[in-house]
Image (cartoon, rainbow, N blue to C red; front, side, top):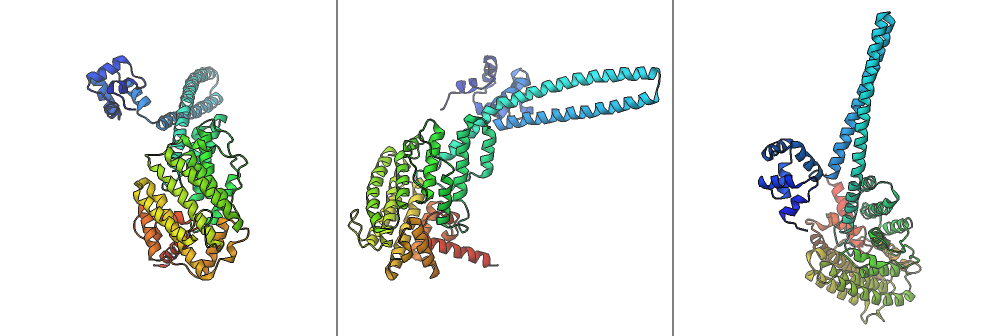
Length: 500
């Protein structure tokens, strides 16, 4: 919220009417102007002389309003350390005096003994007085650090919620995040170990585990291996049955994204998650989380003809949820997540039909599977062209998946349905088996796929060779359909290592 200069300065901690009046007379009307004049001890001394006040008042104003909470805490802790070191030095000096007194006692007799005793008593009294001063100062420092703890916790909570605010309504909406283990440990330290800090700490840990899973080296783990790791991770974080605060809402959002990364390998929750918790954030909607959950459920189905009926029914539910999510976010870039979720679900449905050797898509659609996929690719491209910049990356990578799906359909048409794709295998297990069969014959990106990759890399803010782009390798490690893309990226990586 913007405030006028009067309110902006008067709201500063440590500000009183007299000081506010003096600042106005000194032509200091904004917080930024005042912060510049308080930046250094020399500038504060000059300003204090101009205003006719004590420099200490400006020092307090600078300490309370300009320094960041962690800088204040650091100053206090540094002062604590120096007082402790001074106390230790004092103790060492006292021990030295005691030894000197004992040696003098052994050498001198008589009156010297009396004098040494007086000196010893005097030193002890001085030491006690000094120690009392140090202890009192130490307690004051401990109280200061304790008073700053709520500020550190508040800052940690804001940072965690800020990270959640850029997840996006669909995977690939925003660039990959970097919530590292070090970040999580820092948040844990700032949040403290009180019971009421546990929900925020759990969300920070879940953010780290999800980021670590997504950003594992794309050539070190297959999409199937990544999905299995996501499914295992879900067992460590039980779903919240109710949403009472923002941390419960965060847990719902993160677990649903993690279920999407599990690609159907995670068992369904016994209770339907409260997807309305997604409405806590303006960048998504509960209906988009419903799309993610519904897609994860059909991805878990065995690849059998009997499963197509449930796929068709679920696609209708996804269409309805995606439309409702768009209506909630109408006028915002996030409304384009409707096209992402609907087209991705239709894309996977078409691939399932092709893998099963179907020549039609009834009852969902009248087209043959390949013609259906070609039409969906056109829909995705059209949606990407009219979408705002922030909504294009997710749609651009979905267009690459469409092109890969068409190439998979052409490959299957020349050799028949892959035997390893059927049976009890689900979506990602079937694609993993097909990829191994295709890779044995060699996979090389052609001009059409290279053009789609270049468009997706550009939409993600990367130029140059798309097969060496970091975003390409990130997406290739997460999207099971990007078989040719993975092979091309790997060949580029091998070639770069082999070149001198």
